[in-house]
Image (tube, rainbow, N blue to C red; front, side, top):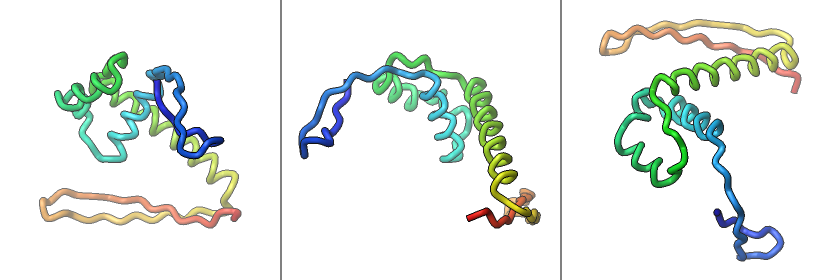
Length: 119
């Protein structure tokens, strides 16, 4: 059960039922891993598992290999969305690259796409 503010009555809260959607939970974990640049093994940390067991005890916590698969599927979905957007909303796309080496002697390459959309 969760409480939400009642839009019709200012300041009052209403009680609503909530059902676990394991697919959405795993997707949100995969998004957290990518957005916060966390290692895949983060989902196997004791602190994270403890927090999730308290917040969402019925969720079967995924392993790092499952999260790797989920992140890959997230990547494929976002790539398809970007392709569709570029095909239907852009006239031309310009792609540039840049490379550099960090102080730790790690090589980086970045690809940047510039475009003007229909708006």
